[in-house]
Image 1 (tube, helix red, strand yellow):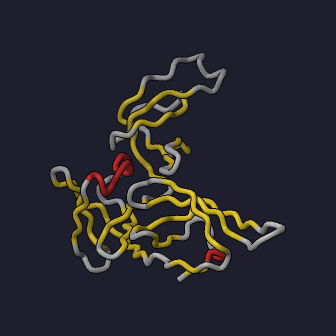
Image 2 (image 1 turned 120 degrees about the vertical axis):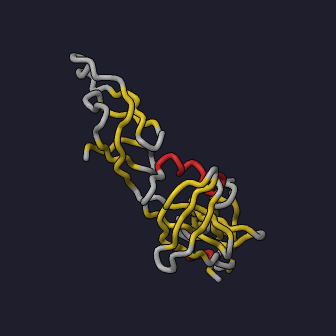
Image 3 (image 1 turned 45 degrees about the horizontal axis):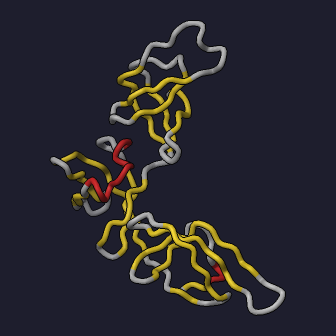
Length: 185
């Protein structure tokens, strides 16, 4: 159990049979009446966001999440196959379970799989990945005055905006949280 006074962004709680992650919270102490905590919660499974108010000091069950380091070994048809780095067990995840993170998944990449009981909630990628550019337009000389950018497709199929000087075959570092170019490798 966790008190509503201990809510912080990133804390996971169980509410109405689902796992919710605290996105924002505000402890309000009005002049008249008792204090309360106004929160914005995100459902980890569906992505829905709700606002909920708790009395100050109210306790709610904290979600017991298990985070395992697994390696993406290969893609079998539609499913993604991951191997547990400690027990060497395989786990198959559907494209729905992997979500939009699949655009940066590369064979051999280590990721964190977050589980609630036996249910996989999310796949956590590293904050940045290094991928090779496989397609991009050549930079035109003289177009650099504004510091422009152009689209590039990397080896996993993801499209990222890169500076004009990047060419095919270069390895670039990409921020997986914001889908932005960080630099050359």
